[in-house]
Length: 213
Ligand SMILES: Cc1ncc(COP(=O)(O)O)c(C=O)c1O
Image (cartoon, rainbow, N blue to C red; front, side, top):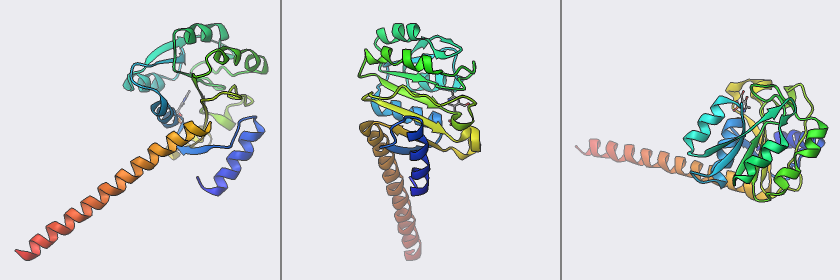
């Protein structure tokens, strides 16, 4: 992450009560969700998801072979009783949209963020993913329920404020989760570079053969 972006992200996240100690850049909120689920979950794992929700998120979970466990909503987002039922079914992760929930527009208020954390608190190993896709332009204040969790991320996308083609989001999370996401990206980059080097060597080899003929 560029130092300038890190300074901006750190200040904004800290002001909203989100721990900015470990940050990563991802290619949008959806990319961040895929990377973080890929870092911890396996095909067949159960994921608690707000229903109704953002259709591409359901497509992503299906493509990753995750089992979707629905969580119902009211105007303040995920309902604690419904989340409790979902987590009791043995979910490995929960995906929550704190504000500008799609398609309902629901947003957490202070009361909801006081009631909701007790539910995942009973499941300390569950990965909590906050998909703050609209971030600063959500039209609702920022809240988080990640404090004190061992596995968590908050993903803030620039898609709504700066444009979806930018494919930029900042992910804050616990040290291990962010390291796993970064580690996989470094591996993918290394493979891409090795692939490029192989192609160049192949071209050099072909050129030498042609010259020799
Ligand atoms: C709830 C939700 N999550 C994620 C996204 C996708 O965000 P991004 O463009 O940052 O991947 C959207 C887009 O509207 C959304 O509504």
